[in-house]
Length: 362
Image 1 (tube, rainbow, N blue to C red):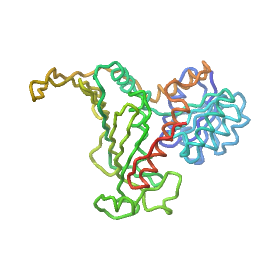
Image 2: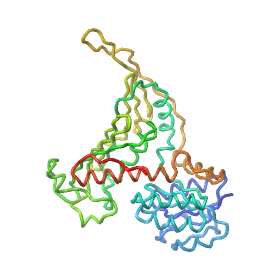
Image 3: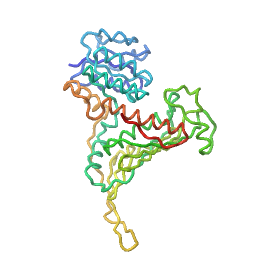
Image 4: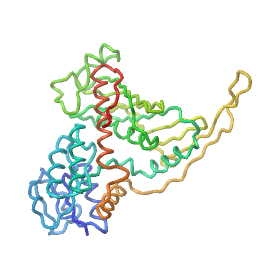
């Protein structure tokens, strides 16, 4: 049995706690949260054993007998110090995304984990989604022909964050999926945004207003900036020329979770809002006759996908990494670092009114 402590039992941490409590190879030894009422709530909700340590003090875990790993589901701004402490205390770490808000801090944590021979894994839940796993197989099998471009839309009406903009809140999911499906990392990014709710009145999006209302970086107080972008349009350019376009917004009642890769022989569609057909392959291409392009070989194929909870797969993956003493092949600390580096480049583009920025992956 692997003794694990869960730090942070807010909206997402509760789900992590549930999954580890249900894992046959895990003994949840402690739960940490600054809010005593949350500790009382999870004790009652899960009928926690009297031996489970419930504490508001993170430092109490330093000398907890037999503890092997910690799961961190606290605000991203706290990740660096918590993860660094945990690694130095000899604990394996599973951290909620993003790993940190600073690429340099991410690299330091990855290097520290390697030096101490400890697992550092990031909970990029979509990378463990059965649809994403099947989609990667389809894209890399060549069934789509020559890959041309991709697009995604992630919109909803709230929740509206006050610590980061819509870019840092939402983009990481679709970037992670595109990277996973393509097996590549963007070399250049570009993004524009619009501020309505926090920092300016409703207005038309123009270059002038984008520059006047450039959103804050996630590590900067909003008081030092002109606002947090509610709507962003992202362009990712990959080494082979493939481009992905992402639409992100948290004030749109039209809730969408849709991602598409288009090739010369068809399109692969991941529609998370569709319970009947979350992964669809649309076949179709052109036959050229003279100066005409005639659509041929058109058909629709709903792909079968395993039904399982993505977060359960994340938790099981973390346990397996500890048992086998092998870093995650799907969502290691280095994968989390790459995503933070991409978001940092996007933040630079946004603050510069939408200029193209090259991604510095080290």
